[in-house]
Length: 127
Image (cartoon, rainbow, N blue to C red; front, side):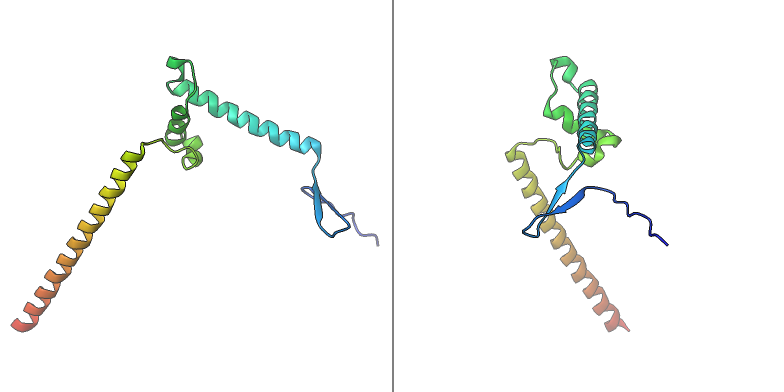
C-alpha cells in the first residue's frame, strides 16, 4: 500500500549547510497579505476621516485615528496602540491624584478595621 503524499500548510522550509532553516514564502501569498493590510489601513483611514474632524480641516490627524479606535467597536483592538494624546503635565496630575486616592482609601480601610476591632472588643466585654 502506498502512503498518501504529505501536504504542508504555510511556508516551506529549506535547510542550509549550517543547519539553520530558511523560510521561503510563495510570492502570491505575500502579495495577498500585503493587499489585505493595505485594504485594512485604507478602511481605517477612510472611516476616521469621515467620522472625525478631517473633513473640516481637509486632513486626517492622529486624534481622528485615536478617536476611531476608542469609539468604534470594529477598531477597539487598536485602542492600546492608538491612545489619545495627553500632555505630560496632565499625566503627572493624574498620577498624583491616583496616589492620593490610594492613600485616602488605605486610611479609610485602616479606620474601618479599627472600628470593627473596637466593636468586637465591646461585644466580648458585654457578654
